[in-house]
Length: 100
Image (cartoon, rainbow, N blue to C red; front, side):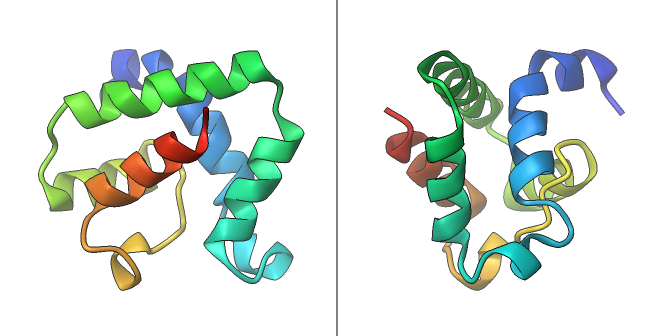
């Protein structure tokens, strides 16, 4: 585990851990609703930080399996995006595009 990296992406960890947690499907019917709730709950400063950290993660150029493992183990993301998206990169870019 790279604790330095985890600390650096702490806002992203908070986002995934709070919204795409293990039981997210009990609260929301679709991942789009999760993102909508995050956007509604967050102030502009937090949104900006999460978007910056999404871009920082994308800039690490992890391969698909590394990205899946990182999202689950380091960022506590329990959404299996690969069932709906071609790649994690596309899904993360989509989230970043929603945060403006």
